[in-house]
Length: 421
Image (cartoon, rainbow, N blue to C red; front, side):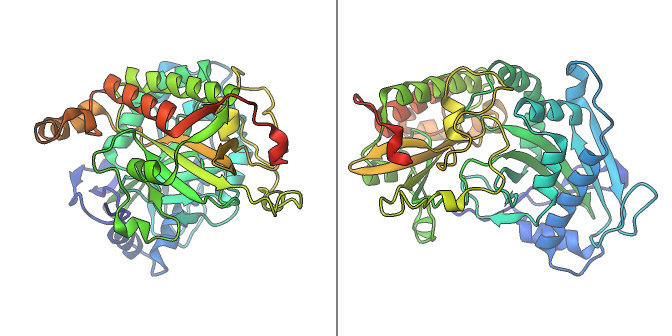
């Protein structure tokens, strides 16, 4: 279907923020227009990007020094709020955007999350605030707006109110799981924020970036393990870099081949992650898969090395390869941090050598909240087995079976890493 960027916008009155919803289909350009007409006349998307950077810079930059204790349950429910008028105040800087209020959810808990992955407060602020954010087209099925930090580290995504609420409920359990297993293909959430301006709430989540911009993705897939309506639309296929789906994968690729160790590490990680999602009753998530075909002519002349991200990757376990390797705990230095594959996983397809980048996306949909209605009527109309919306344990099993048999396959002989150097 179409992927028109949209966010849920809600009316609010002053600090009370009354939650009378505007039409659910209000598109982001309309939200941006509302955002800009409050005060400023400059380009609206630029105003939103600037307000995101200013808000995160101010609230994260001014966090009181971290208390010397573990995260406690109440830390997950704290909301810090700051009002940033355009003329500035004795606490806040002046700016060219409309007056806005910026909320920072569970700031202490998210700081611990970031530390778990080796992200220092200064690095986080530097990544987000130093250069203008880059606007991306939407890689998944959700009607969200995406921004990328200029150093490729973080994605900032707009989310609906229900998704933001669900993430807040999820945080304590999610925190526990990440502490036990920092190596995961689940999304890594680094911050949850809300911009309130002129009757509009724009909620934002900061996450790890799965597909490095500095390496061309020759193929991109959004895979669920379902076949019902799982084909990229004509409109999507016409894009310069389309995101294909399950049926397209079966036509374009006959499976991606990994050496036995990599295959088992990858499937072990996916199984563990799916059990976590199942325990939270989460489903309808996707695997975002990027495939870079290694060009033999470029290799040996440092073809990939030239496009290496500036300053090297800072974030622990944030690349695909680090996410599936071993049972390491946070705090260990990442392996092969200075090779030139940007953390891609080596694979083969026919006679092509590939680098694979992947991660699980779109997990903020609670089956109980959102999907009950959809399942009841879809089940009547279609064979329940092929419908992408199903009970969580069935969904996880089907997802894993598809990934472990159709998408990822095992070659018995070793794939040597020297291919990729």
